[in-house]
Amino acid sequence: MLLLTGLPPAAAADDAPAKAHMATCAKPEWPKEALRKEQTGKVTLSFNVGADGTVLESVVKQSSGFPLLDEAARTALISCKFKPAMVDGRAAASWVAIQYLWTLEDKIDPAAVPAFDAMRERAALGDIVAQRELGTLYAQGKGVARSAEQAARWMTRAAQAGDAVAQFRMGAAYQGGVGVPADAAQAMAWYRKAAEQGYPQAQMVLGTLYQRGQGVPRDEVQALAWLRLAVAQNFGPAFTALASMTREGRGGIVADAAEARRLLRQGAALNDLYAQYHLGAELLSSATAQEQADGVRWLLKAAPLALPPLQALLGFAYRDGVGIARDYVQARAWLHKAAAQSWPAAQYALAVLTEQGLGGPRNDTEALALYQKAAREMPNAALRLADAAAQGELGMAIDPARAEEWRQKAAGMAGLAGRPR
Image 1 (tube, rainbow, N blue to C red):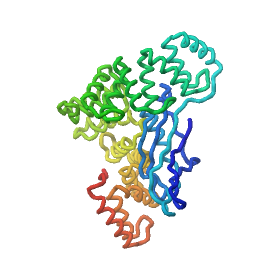
Image 2: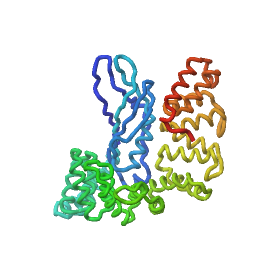
Image 3: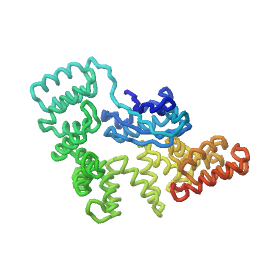
Image 4: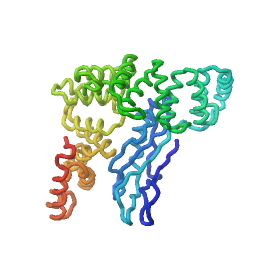
């Protein structure tokens, strides 16, 4: 695995871009499901770094093609410590890009060399499956030194011969610029060839690209058609995308919440983590205790996604005793996971528990730090800081001027930021 940074050049002598201290970055852990499927790719992440060097926000700018890899990289690299950007000699907030390349180990296994040699002979004779598998061996470095370019070369031969799997992989290669130059039009063309042959993963990706207007004009009718084809083959990840369009009545259909939930249940039953997450979130907001309990159960199944809103929902459920017995220790643990990923609602909720000593020891210093982080977006956090500054709480000195600043900040956010649970 290789860590890269993409940083803009300084514009003036007193200017400098934000920079990550690489030694402080946690190494992303390969999700077990992704490793089992030998998924690889390059993800580009963008981090909004504040003037104090803390990460205010993080987003996936360019996907690796595999959501589990994207989220694992984001979850780990958000821990990086940054030197803030300098503008006119002063620290300033800015965005910085970090790329992470998920690759399997470069060490060649001697035992795999004979199999590679045999595959190469078959591929040279025109065996389409062998050409695709040879490309896979080059991509994974099995029996040969890894080479994304050689992988693309052999995968292209298989794709041109009509192999749907190879066509899909070339779509992903052109989309991510792995072994070939990034080319949205080429990616779309290869995805379409694979999708037209009935390859469900290509059908889902094609539907998603039409839905988002990526590499092709946005067309929700086309998106709906391709997603339905993928769902007809019980391709789990497609159920969530189709459920979203069905609930909102997009693509020329009538909105149908009941059908959307049915689709999520189908996807969840097929062990798609995103379907489990969205179904769990929907059921947790239900008015019935049974559905709330089902919601928590599905959220726990989807927990390997490590999404901050999912972790926050579980924290809220344990805190409030919704769908599961109240447990402040568990609430604090789940909120901590989300707060560590800069989720403001989780930071605020965790600050309250920490200040009150629920689920763990009271710690005013930690509570203060969490309130300060949450106050960037949460008006209630800013109001709590205003009260603390006015009354000298949480270890703060009495400072009426500072208290008024926090009140003004809260007033400015009111109606614009998400409310805490």
